[in-house]
Structures are given as C-alpha cells and as structure tokens.
Amino acid sequence: MNEKNSTLLIYTLLYFGFLYVPVLFLPIFSFNDANYMSFPLAGFTTEHYEEMWSKRNLHKALWASIKVGVVASVVSTTFALFAAKAFARYTFRGEKVSYGAIMMPFLIPEIILAVAILVIWVNLGFKLGLVPVTIGHTLFCTPFAMLILIARIEGFDFSLEEASRDLGENAWGTFFRVSFPLYLPGIVAALLLSFIISFDEFILAFFLTGSDATLPMYMWGQMRFVQKLPHVLALGAVIIVFTTFIVLLAFWLRNVGQGKVKKDIAIKL
Amino acid sequence: MNNSFIEINNISKHFEDVKAVNDVSFEIKEGEFFSLLGPSGCGKTTLLRLLAGFEYPTSGNLLIDGTDITALPPDKRPTNMVFQNYAIFPHLNVEKNIQFGLRKLGLSNDEIDKRVKGVLSLVKLEGYEERFSNQLSGGQRQRVALARALVRQPKVLLLDEPLGALDKKLRDEMQLELRTLQKNIGITFVFVTHDQQEAISMSDRVAVMNDGKIQQLSEPNELYKNPENIFVSDFIGETNFLKAETKSSDGEFINVSIEGLGEFKIKNNLNIAANSSDVVCSVRPESMMIAKVKSDWDICLDAKICQTSYLGEMTRFYVEAKGIDKIITVSSQHFDNQSFENNECFISMSLEDISLLNKK
Image 1 (tube, chains in turn brown, red):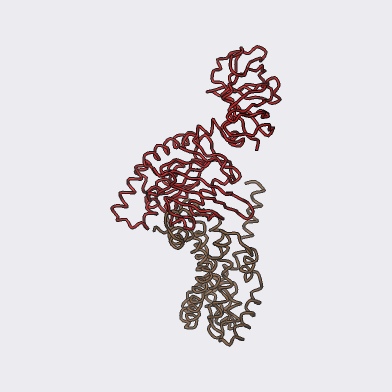
Image 2 (cartoon, each protein chain N blue to C red; image 1 turned 60 degrees about the horizontal axis):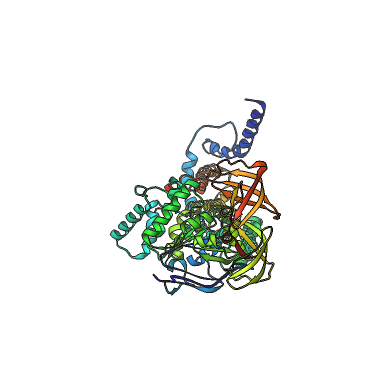
C-alpha cells in the first residue's frame, strides 16, 4: 500500500470513528451492569432491556409515535407525490416559488415552525396533543418525501404514460397501471424516511404534544432521573438498530428498478 | 376505397409564438402508407401527435372515417401509435404489454388469447411472451411496440420515426417488413421520418414538410422527378441549382436563360411567371452524363474535373463547367476507369431533366 492510500485509509477510519463511536456507546452501556455511564464496564446484563419493556408509559409513547409517524408519512408522501409529479413533468408559472414554499419547513429553524403552529393552534381554541404534532410532522416531512420522489420521477419516461393513454386507458387507469407501479419503490422509500423523521422528531413534539408524549418526549422526561438512565440507553440502542434498518431499506428501494432488478420489485398487474 | 379517410382541415398548432403546424390541410386515403417527411422541427411530429390526441390544435379540425376527433382524448381515438423510443412498459412482460390495450375492449379471454397469439406471429415474436423490455434487442422492442399497437386493430397506425434507433442493416430489413406488413393487413399507416430514402422507398404518398407547412404532397417518384419548390428539390436526393431567368412564355412552355447554358424553351409545369429573375433551375447529378467525348444531347458543356469520389455503386465527379461559377456534381454508374486527359471532360444533359423552380 502506498503512502497516499494509507493516508486516505486513516482519514476514512477517523471519519467513521467520529460519526459512529459516540453512537456505539449507547448499546455498549445499555448492556453494562451499572447505573452510570462510565468505564470500566461493570459486567454484562440484559436487565435494562427487561426494565425498559416493563414501563407502561413507554408502550403508550411508542404507540403514540407510531400513530403520528404513520399518518404523517402517508399524508406527506401523498402530497409530495403530487408535487413531485408536477415539478418533474410540467413547467408552469410560479414553479420555483411553489418549490421554495414546499421546501420552507425543511429550511427554517424547526423551533420557529413549532412556535408558529403552537400559537395558531392555541389561538384557534384547540387542545394540544397528537393532532397538532401530526400536522407539524406532515409539514416537516413533505420536503424530504418530495426530494426523494422527484429523484425517482425525473428521468421517468413520460411517453410510457402517453402509450397507456394511446392504448385506451384513461388518466386514472394510466396512473394505477403504469405510473404508480413504476414510482412504487420511490413511494415506499419516501414513506419509510418520512416515518423515521417523524419517529425521531423532538422539537415539534416538545411544543405541541401537551400530555400525550411521543417516544422522544418520553426519553426526554426520563433523562431527568439518574436511576432511569440505563433503560433509556436500552431504548436508544433499540431505536438505533430499527432506524438504521429502515433507512438502509429506504435507500435500497430508492435505487431499485432504476437498473436491473426492475421486474422483480414492481407490482405485476 | 374511401378517398378521404383522414381529413386534416386547416390545422394549426402554436406553442407560445412558435407556429409548429401552420394552417395545414390534406387528406389521407384508407389503406394508404402515408409519410410525413421533413427536417427536425418542421412540424411532422407535432402533426402526428395531433392525430394521436397528445396535443390539441390551436385551430382547425380532424376527421377519421367521417368522425370528428378534434376534441377526443387519445384513449377515445381509433388510432394507435408506435413511439420513437417504443415506450415498452418496463414492469410488464411482452405478453402483458401486448394485452395492455385489450382490457377496455370487452373481449373474452379466448378472443384476447387469439389476438395476442395472432399478432405475435405477425411480428415474428413467438416464444418471447415472458421477456421483459430490458431482455430484448432494439429490433425486438420495435416489434413489441408494433404488436401492442396492432393488436387493438386500430383504423390508423401512427409511427413516429420507429426505425431511427436501429442500425442501418436492421433498418433496411424493417423497412421492407413494415411495408409488406402494411400491405397484408391493410391498415392505414401514417409514418413520420426525417429520412428521405426511408419515406420514398416505403410510402404510397409523401407529404414533405418544412416550417409547419406542407411543401409538397405527392407520390415518391413525383417528389423526386418533379419537385414543386426549391426546398423539396434540395431535400429529396441531391441536386445542382443553376441561376436562371425567365423570358417570354406561351403557357405550356417558357423561354429560360440559364447560367452558362444559354436560352432554352422548357415545359412550365409550375406556372412560373415570365420575365422573372426569381427562379432557379435544378438538375440531378445522375441525370447528367460525363464523358471524354462530345455527345448529341440537348446540352453539352466543356468541363474540368476537380475531384472524384468513388462510392461503390457509383462515382461522383465534382466538375467546373465553362460559364458556371459553381461546382457541378455529376454521378455516374459507368466509371470503368476511363481516364480523362488533363481532367478534361464533357457533361451532357437533356432539357426534360431540367426543372424550373421559384426561388421562394
């Protein structure tokens, strides 16, 4: 190995170390038989995981996060699909402005978005809870979903849709028989990533949940008590594994069908 | 045979301020192989898309078999299209691609099977039912696209440069095959191409388009022999343009003075005005003769060869003729290595091969 390569290798290792070593402490300490995060490790235990699973409030928070995540990801992906199709397929007046408007929640500080929704929601006389969180998450997820879908739909051969119309299908039939199956990997990727973004989101939830905690809110609440730290670590470790799996799946799906595996994944109609 | 199966009446299509198709009217007969020929941007594809229903005209109307289709969406028209890139559905196999357009026709399963089998054998793709688009060659994809359109038994098949993506040899084969296929099934074909040789060799009639207008609509040999304007004469085949000036005319014939050639009385098929300098004469390279000795043809000129290029089936000579300040191209199939002394030669032409055209 020449010098240039070894420098590159060291850089790469440092880079990945920087990215992942802090994250790895979580699973390590979650199996450590002690209440404090400190070395040396005191011994192996799965007690924290058992404790974690026994918390009723955690179950409630998990269920709340799933409900919010599913609704927010489905709604934002649906909006994003319409928007992505419009941007990828047509040129129209106000195209750049509307693109910017949709991307806005992604760019402005989340805390401002949160406060804005809070103020409006409360002034309209509604109660805080999972509904405003879901609305906030939908706003926040739509730009992500749209970016993924635009990448998928750009480069889509629109003569396929024309061919379908030419072969006697109306606009809906064309969508369901041609466009949807071909966009599907992108749609699923957008759904998964939106779900994960919602699932992990803290600031909007912090301002808008009221008494119904989502999972990150639950963790935040538990962090105040030292003796409760270990089971939060265990929960954190589980979430890391779950998130990594979903993100990898989403990235795999995003590229699927662009190349060789096309026919294996698309729905056969 | 109905004389006007497709009627195109005063069709215009404007994109912003571009007149892609500009007040075009003509008719296509039933069972005809009809080509729209022209350079890119001439409006031929737009006209085809207007027939398919992917675009709607700015003005004018379209009739197929007596029915006004101007406002109908593509799925309600009795037309089907073979796309330039074939547009085979990548998530469906060959069989499903071909069946795609049959669902809405209300056919029985037996009838669907029969039609798919029939059309597969028509385009010689039996045994390829399970293949996907990425497992097919360019030529096979083209056949799938053809089968998928024909299986619906359309009144009119629209073809948008379907041979453009194929290599030369395959293209020649497919030209012949398409022509035979069309004659056998008797469906009206409207074929768009920028390749003049393709249009001329396949079509019953050709409409040459430029700048959104029909420049000439006639049978291929007419197009070649009697071009109606300078664009057609230049676009179809090769030609030499000579400066000219018309003198007196007696209706059928007109006196023309041609640069370097002198004054002649030639047929005035296009009713070109007398005493005009806004005209030009065109002579095809292959209608001239090149030889070492003088001939007794109507016109015989002293000339000098500047360059020769050997093309296999013919040889092309670039010659300078006395009194003509332009290099003249002459093609000859009889190039038995006759050596021209000092490149000196005679070029001959007969009056009937000279066509008189308006400059504009």
